Figure 1 (cartoon, protein in one colour):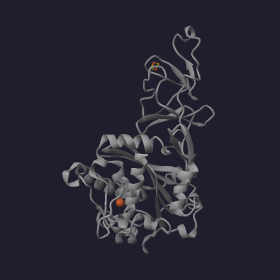
Figure 2 (tube, rainbow, N blue to C red):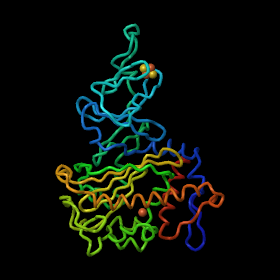
Figure 3 (cartoon, rainbow, N blue to C red):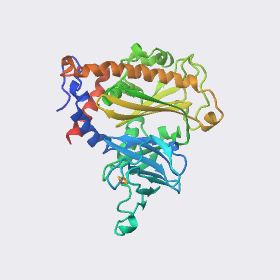
Figure 4 (cartoon, rainbow, N blue to C red):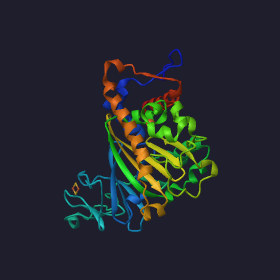
Length: 373
Ligand code: FES
Ligand code: FE
Protein backbone atom coordinates (compact mmCIF):
# COMPACT_ATOMS: atom_id res chain seq x y z
CA UNK A 1 0.00 0.00 0.00
CA UNK A 2 1.38 3.43 -0.86
CA UNK A 3 0.00 6.90 -0.60
CA UNK A 4 -2.64 7.41 -3.25
CA UNK A 5 -2.36 10.40 -5.57
CA UNK A 6 -5.53 12.41 -5.91
CA UNK A 7 -6.20 15.07 -8.55
CA UNK A 8 -5.26 18.72 -8.02
CA UNK A 9 -2.20 17.99 -5.92
CA UNK A 10 -4.08 16.54 -3.02
CA UNK A 11 -2.62 13.41 -1.46
CA UNK A 12 -4.69 11.19 0.75
CA UNK A 13 -3.70 10.71 4.37
CA UNK A 14 -3.65 7.39 6.16
CA UNK A 15 -7.10 5.92 6.77
CA UNK A 16 -8.63 6.72 10.16
CA UNK A 17 -8.08 3.28 11.68
CA UNK A 18 -4.31 3.78 11.54
CA UNK A 19 -4.80 6.15 14.48
CA UNK A 20 -7.13 3.94 16.54
CA UNK A 21 -6.49 0.27 15.77
CA UNK A 22 -4.71 -1.55 18.64
CA UNK A 23 -3.28 -4.06 16.15
CA UNK A 24 -1.60 -1.33 14.13
CA UNK A 25 -0.32 0.23 17.35
CA UNK A 26 1.10 -3.17 18.38
CA UNK A 27 2.90 -3.41 15.02
CA UNK A 28 4.31 0.08 15.51
CA UNK A 29 5.51 -0.88 18.99
CA UNK A 30 7.24 -4.02 17.71
CA UNK A 31 8.69 -2.75 14.44
CA UNK A 32 9.38 0.89 15.23
CA UNK A 33 9.71 1.77 18.92
CA UNK A 34 11.25 -1.52 20.06
CA UNK A 35 13.46 -1.92 17.03
CA UNK A 36 14.83 1.54 16.26
CA UNK A 37 16.87 3.79 18.56
CA UNK A 38 14.44 5.32 21.05
CA UNK A 39 15.42 8.44 22.99
CA UNK A 40 14.59 7.41 26.56
CA UNK A 41 15.82 9.85 29.23
CA UNK A 42 18.20 12.77 29.79
CA UNK A 43 21.43 11.41 31.24
CA UNK A 44 21.25 13.99 34.04
CA UNK A 45 17.94 12.43 35.17
CA UNK A 46 20.10 9.75 36.79
CA UNK A 47 22.92 11.85 38.28
CA UNK A 48 24.44 9.43 40.81
CA UNK A 49 25.09 5.68 41.24
CA UNK A 50 21.81 3.99 42.11
CA UNK A 51 19.54 6.65 40.64
CA UNK A 52 17.11 5.29 38.10
CA UNK A 53 14.19 6.02 35.80
CA UNK A 54 11.69 3.65 34.25
CA UNK A 55 10.16 4.42 30.85
CA UNK A 56 7.85 2.69 28.42
CA UNK A 57 9.57 1.78 25.16
CA UNK A 58 7.09 0.15 22.82
CA UNK A 59 5.29 -2.44 24.93
CA UNK A 60 8.16 -2.88 27.39
CA UNK A 61 9.07 -1.20 30.66
CA UNK A 62 12.75 -0.30 30.64
CA UNK A 63 14.85 0.46 33.73
CA UNK A 64 17.72 2.89 33.19
CA UNK A 65 20.15 3.38 36.02
CA UNK A 66 23.68 4.43 36.90
CA UNK A 67 26.23 1.84 38.02
CA UNK A 68 28.69 2.15 40.91
CA UNK A 69 31.30 3.28 38.39
CA UNK A 70 28.93 5.98 37.15
CA UNK A 71 28.09 4.30 33.84
CA UNK A 72 24.58 4.26 32.41
CA UNK A 73 22.93 0.83 32.26
CA UNK A 74 19.60 -0.16 30.74
CA UNK A 75 17.63 -3.32 31.52
CA UNK A 76 14.21 -4.79 30.92
CA UNK A 77 12.37 -3.89 34.12
CA UNK A 78 11.46 -7.51 34.77
CA UNK A 79 12.56 -9.84 37.52
CA UNK A 80 14.12 -12.99 36.04
CA UNK A 81 12.52 -15.24 38.68
CA UNK A 82 8.79 -15.13 37.98
CA UNK A 83 8.53 -11.93 36.02
CA UNK A 84 7.42 -9.32 38.55
CA UNK A 85 7.93 -5.72 37.53
CA UNK A 86 11.08 -4.83 39.40
CA UNK A 87 10.74 -1.05 39.85
CA UNK A 88 7.24 0.36 39.91
CA UNK A 89 8.25 4.00 40.42
CA UNK A 90 8.88 6.31 37.46
CA UNK A 91 12.10 7.51 39.08
CA UNK A 92 14.04 7.04 42.28
CA UNK A 93 17.25 5.96 43.89
CA UNK A 94 18.48 2.73 45.45
CA UNK A 95 21.45 2.49 47.78
CA UNK A 96 23.22 -0.53 46.34
CA UNK A 97 20.84 -2.85 44.54
CA UNK A 98 17.38 -3.45 43.11
CA UNK A 99 15.29 -5.87 45.15
CA UNK A 100 12.22 -7.50 43.65
CA UNK A 101 9.17 -6.87 45.83
CA UNK A 102 7.83 -10.39 45.20
CA UNK A 103 10.39 -12.95 46.51
CA UNK A 104 13.28 -10.55 47.13
CA UNK A 105 15.68 -11.57 44.39
CA UNK A 106 18.28 -8.83 44.46
CA UNK A 107 20.32 -7.43 41.56
CA UNK A 108 23.36 -5.18 41.76
CA UNK A 109 23.65 -1.96 39.75
CA UNK A 110 25.22 -3.91 36.87
CA UNK A 111 22.18 -6.18 36.77
CA UNK A 112 23.89 -9.24 38.28
CA UNK A 113 21.82 -11.44 40.59
CA UNK A 114 23.52 -11.07 43.97
CA UNK A 115 21.06 -12.48 46.47
CA UNK A 116 17.92 -14.55 46.69
CA UNK A 117 16.34 -16.14 49.74
CA UNK A 118 17.49 -19.75 50.14
CA UNK A 119 19.76 -19.46 47.14
CA UNK A 120 22.44 -21.35 49.09
CA UNK A 121 20.17 -24.36 48.68
CA UNK A 122 20.23 -23.83 44.92
CA UNK A 123 23.96 -23.62 44.21
CA UNK A 124 23.47 -24.13 40.48
CA UNK A 125 21.75 -20.83 39.82
CA UNK A 126 23.99 -18.88 37.48
CA UNK A 127 23.98 -15.34 38.83
CA UNK A 128 24.94 -13.79 35.51
CA UNK A 129 22.57 -15.94 33.46
CA UNK A 130 19.72 -14.94 35.79
CA UNK A 131 20.78 -11.33 35.97
CA UNK A 132 18.63 -8.58 34.52
CA UNK A 133 18.31 -8.70 30.74
CA UNK A 134 20.39 -5.86 29.27
CA UNK A 135 19.26 -3.36 26.65
CA UNK A 136 21.55 -1.73 24.07
CA UNK A 137 22.17 1.93 24.74
CA UNK A 138 23.99 4.96 23.37
CA UNK A 139 24.46 8.39 24.91
CA UNK A 140 24.17 11.31 22.51
CA UNK A 141 23.22 14.97 22.97
CA UNK A 142 23.09 14.29 26.72
CA UNK A 143 20.29 11.74 26.27
CA UNK A 144 20.21 7.97 26.67
CA UNK A 145 18.95 6.23 23.51
CA UNK A 146 18.00 2.56 23.74
CA UNK A 147 17.22 -0.17 21.26
CA UNK A 148 15.50 -3.37 22.30
CA UNK A 149 16.53 -5.14 19.09
CA UNK A 150 18.88 -8.11 19.44
CA UNK A 151 20.98 -6.43 16.77
CA UNK A 152 20.20 -2.71 16.78
CA UNK A 153 20.38 -0.70 13.59
CA UNK A 154 23.50 1.41 13.12
CA UNK A 155 23.15 4.55 15.24
CA UNK A 156 25.26 6.45 12.72
CA UNK A 157 23.26 5.15 9.77
CA UNK A 158 19.90 6.02 11.29
CA UNK A 159 19.81 8.69 14.01
CA UNK A 160 22.89 10.65 12.90
CA UNK A 161 22.06 10.22 9.21
CA UNK A 162 18.64 11.72 9.80
CA UNK A 163 20.24 14.81 11.34
CA UNK A 164 22.57 15.05 8.34
CA UNK A 165 19.61 14.74 5.98
CA UNK A 166 17.82 17.53 7.81
CA UNK A 167 20.62 19.94 8.62
CA UNK A 168 23.27 19.23 6.00
CA UNK A 169 25.77 17.95 8.55
CA UNK A 170 25.77 16.85 12.16
CA UNK A 171 28.15 19.71 12.92
CA UNK A 172 25.28 22.14 12.51
CA UNK A 173 23.69 20.54 15.54
CA UNK A 174 27.01 19.99 17.31
CA UNK A 175 27.51 23.76 17.44
CA UNK A 176 24.75 23.93 20.04
CA UNK A 177 26.67 21.47 22.28
CA UNK A 178 23.38 20.03 23.45
CA UNK A 179 25.11 17.48 25.70
CA UNK A 180 26.68 20.23 27.83
CA UNK A 181 23.43 22.12 28.47
CA UNK A 182 21.30 21.96 31.61
CA UNK A 183 17.59 21.35 31.93
CA UNK A 184 16.07 24.72 32.86
CA UNK A 185 12.51 23.46 32.74
CA UNK A 186 10.75 20.21 31.94
CA UNK A 187 7.04 19.94 31.17
CA UNK A 188 5.30 16.62 30.65
CA UNK A 189 2.16 16.62 28.51
CA UNK A 190 -0.31 13.76 28.58
CA UNK A 191 -1.85 14.01 25.12
CA UNK A 192 -5.00 12.08 24.25
CA UNK A 193 -3.97 11.53 20.64
CA UNK A 194 -2.12 9.04 18.48
CA UNK A 195 1.62 9.69 18.21
CA UNK A 196 1.40 10.05 14.40
CA UNK A 197 -1.00 12.98 14.69
CA UNK A 198 1.64 14.70 16.82
CA UNK A 199 4.42 14.02 14.30
CA UNK A 200 2.27 15.09 11.36
CA UNK A 201 1.37 18.29 13.15
CA UNK A 202 5.01 18.98 13.92
CA UNK A 203 5.96 18.45 10.27
CA UNK A 204 3.66 21.13 8.86
CA UNK A 205 3.14 24.80 9.45
CA UNK A 206 -0.08 25.14 7.46
CA UNK A 207 -1.72 25.51 10.89
CA UNK A 208 0.70 28.12 12.26
CA UNK A 209 -1.23 31.23 11.23
CA UNK A 210 -4.43 29.81 12.70
CA UNK A 211 -3.33 28.48 16.07
CA UNK A 212 0.08 30.01 16.92
CA UNK A 213 -0.34 33.78 17.29
CA UNK A 214 2.69 34.19 19.59
CA UNK A 215 4.97 32.06 17.42
CA UNK A 216 4.09 33.85 14.20
CA UNK A 217 4.84 37.20 15.90
CA UNK A 218 8.38 35.98 16.55
CA UNK A 219 8.76 34.05 13.26
CA UNK A 220 6.66 35.96 10.68
CA UNK A 221 7.58 33.54 7.85
CA UNK A 222 5.57 30.88 9.69
CA UNK A 223 2.38 32.80 9.03
CA UNK A 224 2.81 31.94 5.33
CA UNK A 225 2.21 28.30 6.16
CA UNK A 226 5.41 26.91 4.69
CA UNK A 227 6.21 23.41 5.81
CA UNK A 228 8.40 23.29 8.89
CA UNK A 229 10.71 21.19 6.70
CA UNK A 230 11.18 24.21 4.46
CA UNK A 231 13.11 25.92 7.24
CA UNK A 232 15.40 23.15 8.31
CA UNK A 233 18.35 24.03 6.15
CA UNK A 234 18.32 27.80 6.34
CA UNK A 235 16.24 28.30 9.48
CA UNK A 236 13.43 30.79 10.03
CA UNK A 237 14.39 34.40 10.74
CA UNK A 238 13.27 36.19 13.87
CA UNK A 239 11.09 39.26 13.19
CA UNK A 240 13.15 42.46 12.98
CA UNK A 241 11.87 43.96 16.23
CA UNK A 242 12.20 40.70 18.14
CA UNK A 243 15.11 40.51 20.58
CA UNK A 244 14.83 36.87 21.64
CA UNK A 245 12.82 33.66 21.28
CA UNK A 246 10.41 34.61 24.08
CA UNK A 247 6.66 34.88 24.44
CA UNK A 248 6.74 38.68 24.02
CA UNK A 249 9.84 38.97 21.84
CA UNK A 250 11.88 40.36 24.74
CA UNK A 251 15.56 39.63 25.31
CA UNK A 252 16.51 35.96 25.69
CA UNK A 253 19.30 34.42 27.78
CA UNK A 254 23.03 34.04 27.07
CA UNK A 255 23.62 32.88 23.51
CA UNK A 256 25.18 29.43 23.18
CA UNK A 257 28.86 30.04 22.48
CA UNK A 258 29.39 27.49 19.71
CA UNK A 259 26.78 28.60 17.21
CA UNK A 260 27.66 30.14 13.86
CA UNK A 261 26.68 33.71 12.97
CA UNK A 262 24.11 32.28 10.54
CA UNK A 263 22.52 30.34 13.40
CA UNK A 264 21.97 33.55 15.37
CA UNK A 265 18.47 35.09 15.28
CA UNK A 266 17.20 31.94 13.63
CA UNK A 267 14.97 29.04 14.53
CA UNK A 268 15.68 25.53 13.28
CA UNK A 269 13.51 22.48 13.84
CA UNK A 270 14.17 18.84 13.09
CA UNK A 271 12.45 15.53 13.68
CA UNK A 272 14.48 12.44 14.46
CA UNK A 273 12.40 9.36 13.83
CA UNK A 274 10.64 7.81 15.50
CA UNK A 275 9.86 10.06 18.47
CA UNK A 276 12.12 13.11 18.86
CA UNK A 277 11.64 16.76 17.83
CA UNK A 278 14.42 19.26 18.39
CA UNK A 279 14.03 23.02 18.12
CA UNK A 280 17.17 25.14 18.09
CA UNK A 281 17.31 28.85 18.84
CA UNK A 282 20.38 30.94 19.73
CA UNK A 283 20.06 30.73 23.52
CA UNK A 284 18.32 27.41 24.13
CA UNK A 285 17.20 24.06 22.80
CA UNK A 286 13.70 22.67 23.11
CA UNK A 287 13.92 18.89 23.08
CA UNK A 288 10.72 16.81 22.82
CA UNK A 289 10.50 13.07 23.36
CA UNK A 290 7.29 11.16 22.78
CA UNK A 291 6.30 8.03 24.68
CA UNK A 292 3.46 6.40 22.74
CA UNK A 293 1.37 4.70 25.46
CA UNK A 294 -1.67 3.54 23.49
CA UNK A 295 -3.23 4.13 20.07
CA UNK A 296 -4.98 7.19 21.49
CA UNK A 297 -2.54 8.38 24.14
CA UNK A 298 0.98 9.82 23.95
CA UNK A 299 3.07 11.29 26.74
CA UNK A 300 5.38 14.06 25.55
CA UNK A 301 8.27 15.07 27.77
CA UNK A 302 9.73 18.41 26.76
CA UNK A 303 13.02 19.83 28.07
CA UNK A 304 14.14 23.45 27.76
CA UNK A 305 17.95 23.34 27.77
CA UNK A 306 20.15 26.35 28.58
CA UNK A 307 23.78 27.06 29.37
CA UNK A 308 24.58 25.57 32.81
CA UNK A 309 25.38 29.07 34.13
CA UNK A 310 21.86 30.23 33.28
CA UNK A 311 20.35 27.41 35.30
CA UNK A 312 22.87 27.55 38.18
CA UNK A 313 22.36 31.29 38.62
CA UNK A 314 18.60 30.84 38.65
CA UNK A 315 18.06 33.24 35.74
CA UNK A 316 14.44 33.80 34.75
CA UNK A 317 13.72 31.46 31.84
CA UNK A 318 9.94 31.78 32.12
CA UNK A 319 9.44 33.98 29.05
CA UNK A 320 11.30 31.61 26.78
CA UNK A 321 9.60 28.58 28.31
CA UNK A 322 6.20 30.19 27.97
CA UNK A 323 6.53 30.71 24.23
CA UNK A 324 6.96 27.06 23.33
CA UNK A 325 4.78 25.81 26.16
CA UNK A 326 1.94 27.77 24.55
CA UNK A 327 2.89 26.39 21.13
CA UNK A 328 2.89 22.86 22.55
CA UNK A 329 -0.52 23.29 24.17
CA UNK A 330 -1.94 24.78 20.97
CA UNK A 331 -0.52 21.88 18.94
CA UNK A 332 -1.64 19.14 21.34
CA UNK A 333 -5.13 20.66 21.59
CA UNK A 334 -5.32 20.43 17.79
CA UNK A 335 -4.20 16.79 17.87
CA UNK A 336 -6.78 15.97 20.55
CA UNK A 337 -9.42 17.70 18.45
CA UNK A 338 -8.63 15.32 15.55
CA UNK A 339 -8.27 12.07 17.49
CA UNK A 340 -12.01 11.37 18.08
CA UNK A 341 -12.69 11.89 14.37
CA UNK A 342 -10.23 9.14 13.44
CA UNK A 343 -12.91 6.58 14.32
CA UNK A 344 -15.67 8.43 12.47
CA UNK A 345 -17.10 6.88 9.31
CA UNK A 346 -16.34 10.19 7.64
CA UNK A 347 -12.62 9.57 8.09
CA UNK A 348 -12.71 5.88 7.17
CA UNK A 349 -10.68 6.57 4.03
CA UNK A 350 -8.71 9.39 5.62
CA UNK A 351 -8.41 13.03 4.67
CA UNK A 352 -6.11 14.91 2.33
CA UNK A 353 -2.77 16.69 2.37
CA UNK A 354 -2.48 20.04 0.56
CA UNK A 355 0.77 20.76 -1.32
CA UNK A 356 2.54 22.35 1.65
CA UNK A 357 1.86 19.14 3.60
CA UNK A 358 2.97 16.70 0.91
CA UNK A 359 6.12 15.67 2.77
CA UNK A 360 3.83 14.14 5.42
CA UNK A 361 2.99 11.58 2.71
CA UNK A 362 6.64 10.48 2.81
CA UNK A 363 6.26 9.84 6.53
CA UNK A 364 3.17 7.76 5.82
CA UNK A 365 5.06 5.74 3.18
CA UNK A 366 7.93 5.22 5.63
CA UNK A 367 5.52 4.08 8.34
CA UNK A 368 3.71 1.61 6.11
CA UNK A 369 6.97 0.13 4.87
CA UNK A 370 8.15 -0.29 8.45
CA UNK A 371 5.09 -2.05 9.78
CA UNK A 372 4.74 -4.28 6.72
CA UNK A 373 8.40 -5.35 6.79
FE1 FES B 1 10.95 -11.41 41.54
FE2 FES B 1 10.13 -13.71 42.46
S1 FES B 1 9.31 -12.56 40.83
S2 FES B 1 11.74 -12.50 43.17
FE1 FE C 1 2.35 23.90 15.59
